[in-house]
Length: 84
Picture 1 (cartoon, one colour):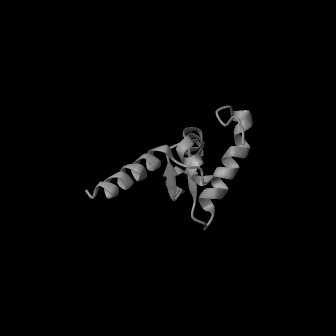
Picture 2 (cartoon, rainbow, N blue to C red):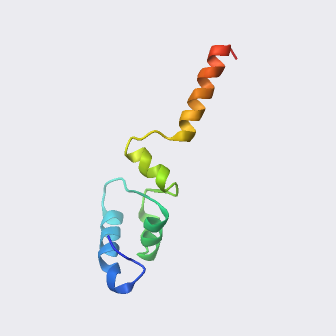
């Protein structure tokens, strides 16, 4: 939305944050800058889910593979093959 840290650019970001927090829909935000913007707009407590995962969160939303989960899946398959 904008450079929310600078007052002259923060209005749009604040307005969107307020609309999200006031919505009856389940709200999800993620990433350090987005969380900081929501905190600055004083709406963080009205957001249903706040993810601090940043890039991993965006990859998850985009349906991209998550390396840590892939590694766990591979280990589980290896254990199954070994019978442990």
